[in-house]
Amino acid sequence: MWGIIATWRMALEGVTESASALAAGQTAASAVVDAVAAVEDFPLYKSVGYGGLPTEKGEVELDAAFMDGDTLAFGAVGNLVDIANPVRVAHALSRQRYNSLLVGQGAREWALSQGFAEKTMLTDRAIQHYRKRCRETLDKGLSPYDGHDTVGIIGLDAQGSMSVATSTSGLFMKKRGRLGDSPIIGSGFYCDSQIGAATATGVGEDLMKGCTSYEIVRRMAQGMTPQQAADSVVFELEDNLMSRFGRVGDLSVVCMNHRGEFGAATNIKTFSFTVATASHPLTVYLAERRHEKTYYQPVDEAWMQAYAARIRAPIEEEE
Image (tube, rainbow, N blue to C red; front, top):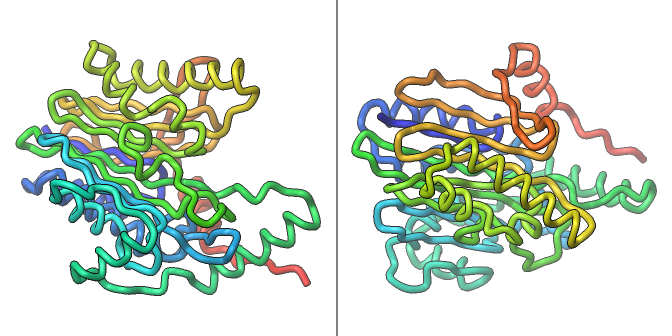
């Protein structure tokens, strides 16, 4: 058995390549890192890597992580500036005994010392988004904190090994130095080849309050199916935050167990995810919540075309 599952439609191209590679015997680690790097490299995805949206200071600070489910080794970077593929830096850090999580200037210095390429990650299109949102925030009172879609990808290879990787530019217009859940082990990601893996996307400040990814894996270990674990963790966290904190942001997860069975859960209406296994053809699903359960169905061609048009649409900058 092999399998791969990812948050969001934006992972489709990378997942397509990695699914073929897994079917041909590639390791889960290589598959997830390559698939995430493909998302990082695509400039029209404005929440990950090159083209990611900036902080309130107009800088792009990137977070990424990788975890090996066989050894439980992990590596992560936060607030990484102008390095081409943060996920590859995180993967390299996972091979270090210490200093597994590096942030800011220290992360950049280490990446450069290891030969990772410098690259200006702020694009003209991202600058246009930034200017437009600055005006909307001032003129219309809109929240600046939109656009926080993390790509998280879980892989299972034919040898039974599992890995997970994440990457994001974080909350749009975030404070300099802000970290969300994506580079934080147990919250944004967790992987144990003997059980399964999970990864999350949404408002990191809320996802971290439930140690979301670890909790999903823990419940799978206790006998829950991936879908049961995902739904129960997301909706219990939502209920808990609403009753105790008074509000809750977007919470979405995907997970897979060591048998290649998968699950997804969300508290929003527009969560898409991409999955393929040895027994399940490559599919993009659109998930929606109904009460305390998540249901999903394959997207149709009209949805795919509308998606392609939306990410390529010109940004209207009002004078």
